[in-house]
Amino acid sequence: MKSNQAITLREPDLSGTSCPTVFTWNGSGFEFITDTISAGILGEVVSPGQYWTPDPDEWIRIEGERLKPTDGLLDVRWVNPLEEVTYLDLVRLVAVEHPEGIEVYPGERMVGDPGSRESAKIHVLERLRPVAGAVGGDGDDATEVLARADRVYFDRFRFLPFDGFAEDWRLTLDLGPSPGRILLLHGWTRWNSSASVIAAAQARKTLWGPILEVQGRDGTWRTGLADMGVPAGLPRTMLVDLGSVLKDGEHVVRVRTNRTLYFDQALMADQVAVFEPEASSPIPRVHIVELPLARAELRRLGYPRRVLPDGKEPEVPDYSRIDAEAEWGSHSGFLTRFGDVAELLASVDDRFAVMGHGEEVALSFNAAGLAPLAPGSKRTFLLYSNGFEKGRDIHGAHPFTVEPLPFQAMASYPYPEKTAPVDESRLRYLLEWNTRLSARE
Image 1 (cartoon, rainbow, N blue to C red):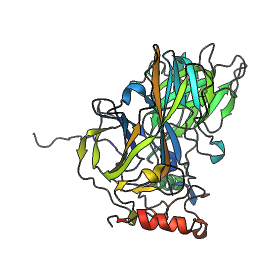
Image 2: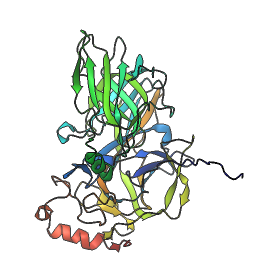
Image 3: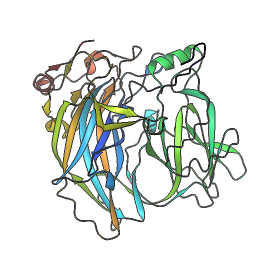
Image 4: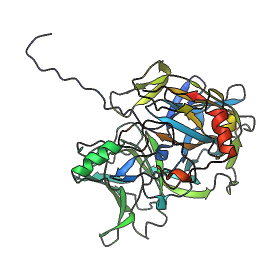
C-alpha cells in the first residue's frame, strides 16, 4: 500500500438493540422471517420525561413454503440476539388454507398513539397489484422502486445527526382509478433511541408522523390518518385500511414524516373478508386452524451472523452461522431457568420466559391438524407473540436490570412501585422459574 494517501473505510451502522427475531424451518434450514414485538419496548424515551407506552403483541405473516413440517412438527426459533432482555408471555401459531387467487394478511401496523391501537384482524384479500404511480418529495419518480419487494428501497430523504431522524420528507402514491380498500406497504424502520430523542430535543427537533393525507377531488389535501403507523422493525408488510379514509373518486394519498422509513413495495388490494383470529372464517374455502404448542425449550444459542446480502441494510440474520460471543452488556438480575417453558407460554398471565441475549426459545407446534391441501389451494401461517423487551440505553427506564418485571395491566413503564401484582401466585412463579442469575456487567 502506498503512503500519503487517504483511505476510506465504510461499515454498516448496525444497532445493538431492536427486538427478538423469528426463524422457521423451511425443509432444509432455518430461514429468517423478521423480528417481532418491537412495540413492546420498555422504558424508551419518546420525549424528555415521557416514555413509550408498550404494545406487547404482534402477528407476523409466514408464507407456507417457509415453514414445513418435520416428523409432524412445525419448528420455529424465537431468538434474542441483541443487547436486550426479553420477556415472552405467549406464542400461538395458526394456519390459514385459502385459494391460490387470494392472500391473507394480519392487520398489523405499529402506531404511536395508544388510542390508535386496535386488535389485529385477519384480512382476506384479492387482486393485489402495484400502485399506479409513486413520486418523491423532489418530484422524482418512484413507481418502479415500489413495484416489487426486492430490497430496492425508497430512501430519498436526508439524515439528521440523530438516530432515526431525517429531514421532513413525503411520498405521494397514485392508487389507481379503482383503488380498492387496502394499502399494503412493505418495508422497514431504522429505529431512534432514547439517547437520540434527547439529543434531538436539545436541537429542538422531535419525531412526527407518519401521517397519511388524501387529495380531494378539488385538489386540496386533508389528513386521512394522523397516526398511519410504521413497519415495526426489519422488513415486513403493514396493512393500512383505507375504507374510512377515501371518498368516492379519490385515489391519491401521500405519506409525510421525518422518521427514517424505507419502503420497498406498495400494493393495493380488494378486501374479501375480515375476521378475528379466534373466529371461524366467513369465506368458503378459507379455513383457519390453530396448531397446539408441542414443545418450548429455553436454551443458550449464541448470535446468528448479521449479514448484508447485497452489501447494504437491512441485515438478514443467518441461523446457519452462529457466533459464540457478542460484545453486549447484560442486564443484572434473575432470568428464567433453562429447559421446558411451555407452561409459561400457554396464556397471557404475566408469567414470562425471561431470557438474556444469545438465548432462544425452540418452539415446535403440532402439525397433525393440517389436512392435505385441496387442489388450487395454499397455506399461510400467522405467528402470534406477546411479550416485552428492554435495551440498555442509559437514558431509558431501569436500563441495566432485569427487574422491575413488566405486567400486562400496567399503564406505563416505569410504573409506580405499588402497582405491580404481588400475590402468592406471582411469588411462586418468581421462586420456581426465575432462578438463573444473569451476568453482571
